[in-house]
Structures are given as C-alpha cells and as structure tokens.
Image 1: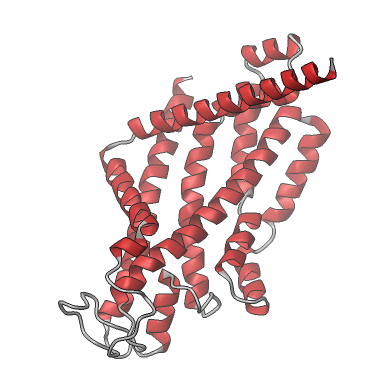
Image 2: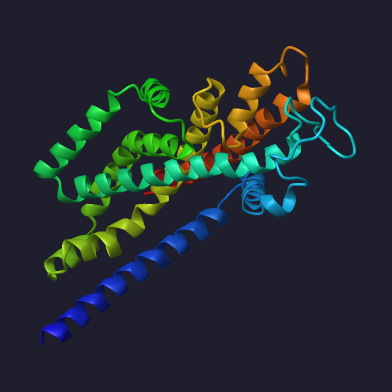
Length: 302
C-alpha cells in the first residue's frame, strides 16, 4: 500500500509540475504574441544579444586574451581596434556580452524566484504568514541596496557570481509585493474556492490554480530586473569593484577610463560597450513596458 501511495503522490506532483510548465509556456507565448511593433524590435534585439552570448566563441574573431599591438585604431583586421594590452576590442565586446548577461539573468532569476515565493505564500495564506512575510519585505526595502553591494564588493573578493548573488538576494521586494497583490485577487476567485472545498492540498491549488494566473505579472518584473541588474553590474565594474579577470561591458568601460581611453579619445574602446548596455536595456524595457501595459488593460477591462 505504501508503495502505491508513494507512486500516486509522485504522479500527482509530476502532473502539477507539468501543468505549471505548460501554463508558463502558454503565458510566454501569449505575451510574445501580444507585443506591439516597438516591443517586437526590442524582442529582436534581445534575441540577438542572447545568440551572441551563447555563441560568443564562434562569433568572436579572436580569443579576447590574445595580444596584438596595443592602441591600434579600427581597421580591417581589428574592426574596433585594440586596447592598451593589445586585446581585440570586438572580441572583448562579444565575450563581455556573455558575462554581463549571466550576471543580469542570474540576479533577475534569483530575485524573481524569491519574490514570487514570498508573494504567493503571503497572498495565499494571509493572516500571520502575510504579516511576517510583508514585514520581512519592508525590512529589505529599507536596506540601501547599491551602497551595500558596493561596500560588500569592496571587502570581498571581486567576483561576478558574488555580484549576481547579492543583487538577487536584495532585489526581490518589488516582485513580492506585485505577486502578493495579484495572489490576493486570484485567491477570491470561484475556481480557487471550489478547489479548496473539494479538499485539494494548498500546494496543488498554488501550482495549478494560482501560479498560472500570476505569471503575467511576474514576467515584466523578471525582464525589468534583468535590465536593473545589468546596469548595476556595469556601475560596480566601472567603479573598479568588478572582477578584473572577466570580460564584461562594465569592466571594458572601467579599463578605458583608467588606462587612457577617455583622455586620448579612443571612442572605439569605450563607446561600443556603452552602446551595447543602452541597446540591451532598451530592448528589455520595451518588452517589459508592453507586458505591463497589457496587464493594465486587462485589469481595467475586468
């Protein structure tokens, strides 16, 4: 009997997870299909950066650590010239895409997971759980996030993994509040009350009835968190608190500033990474704003 019960529980858990994943895929497909013209341009830029990051080794013309003559201007062999160490700047830019996006996605994913869990539990269970979790959220809201990250980065060993971890652990508060607000609304829906009266477990209701109807408010927060994390990583690296052993857009700007790129007018050294940061953040903001507008329209319609 125990083996049969265990199999049933495992099968039920698998069905819940499968249903949630299918709902997530369906929600993402609907969100992409609802993007406006400008947002589709943002999506195209977003996908382009992702392809460059994934296939950096195949796209880059050289190894970013390979040395040539220093301070070479843009030319046929080196379209963006070389830096003070003779590294090809275009290759640095391409490999820097991978590092910068890893930090952005890593921090945003962690912040979204934490914020979603806190918001779901707070909005679903309400009462004491709501007060405790929202009290914890208020405490984190009072923490000066960027100054704290700068101080910790100054005292700890520079690492882009540490930067992503710190940002992910601090930037979940806005997601938690938005998810909690939507969960409180979904909690009162008739199908949730029906599932509760039929005796379904809280986990089953949260995964199959509540979470699929909250995903459309989580996606915009996730996208905007990517942009915020990438800007923060670039800011920290520009201040010299990033990992000097890794190629990132922020470290490229830092090296250009500290090693004569700005003073000598080597625009091909500092302008491309700044332009990449701007374009990527713009692509994410366009998509996130479009999804938020769609959510606002659906809320007004209701």
